[in-house]
Image (cartoon, rainbow, N blue to C red; front, top):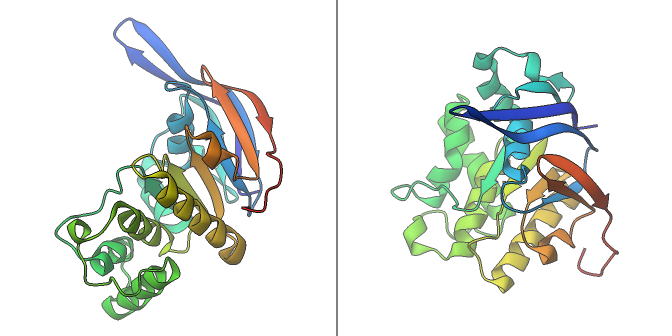
Length: 232
């Protein structure tokens, strides 16, 4: 088991009101699984991803990530857990425009204290893995949206995380490019054994995953396994 949540609850206070973003979520994700999370805006999808990835802390409940009960750790330990165990991919790419593709991918390794030579070697390897070995010196403004998302994926996997968390990774892409990005994530899942969790509004993206979790009002209301297709 790579992730387990037990009665996971997140409440945001808005003046005198409370917003229950997550309400007692129990979820188990197997190592090597390719999972999608769907639901309307405000259903709790991104909140769940943020709690699993240690970007936020729950109001109550438990998150166990790769054998570590992260909800018991001091706040100061969470950046290390994120660096070592989690890769993040976001809808907006979040690349630094003044840095080259190689330099963007090197950033997590720099924060982890990896030597410059090893940083460069591993960043180049990650970019080659996502098909951008010939774009090392290009900056984001010189690349397409699909190429920028590939750089973001390379940055997310360069630390060899146990789990890749993607929040609407195809939301800014056209249908053809989105399919290429999902193909790439499938390749990483199958060949590198990376567990992948995707938050998406797109039924076509969700249909390419092994299991779909549906959220509504902060609760899991159902789950299903899409029919196997030749595209998966």
